[in-house]
Length: 169
Figure 1 (cartoon, one colour):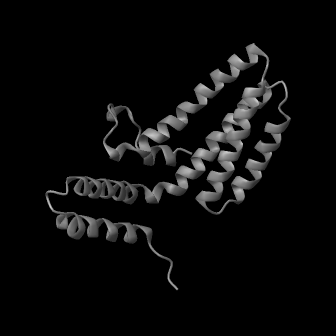
Figure 2: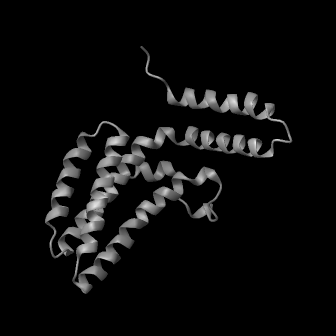
């Protein structure tokens, strides 16, 4: 059995939508035509981004680990976060697919958020929030580059290309 080529599958679906489905929608069915254009846009975005999915997943996990590493020393009680961080380091390297890596990242971020919420020291909490803001700039840059083809970025010249971000790891 042959492994399906995602680029080919997405391209085929995109061509079917553009060449067959969308033209067959009657003009008076405006909502249906709009929905077809939306599906075409999503398929087009997927087609452009599918080859970056693995790098995106790895980079997002690396950013979450970096955030946890910087936050752990500031916490009054870092026990739970230390354990979650160690589990993410072990599991992230072994994760063979993006969904597993993303689940590991989400679990780490959930523990991270709970650890910050439990912090009672106001000075430490202020420092934690500064760290979150600083590290989240990397995540924001990745998200902006990822969604660039959607056309909603007001300052596209300020956005690093996705390939540059994922290769910089």
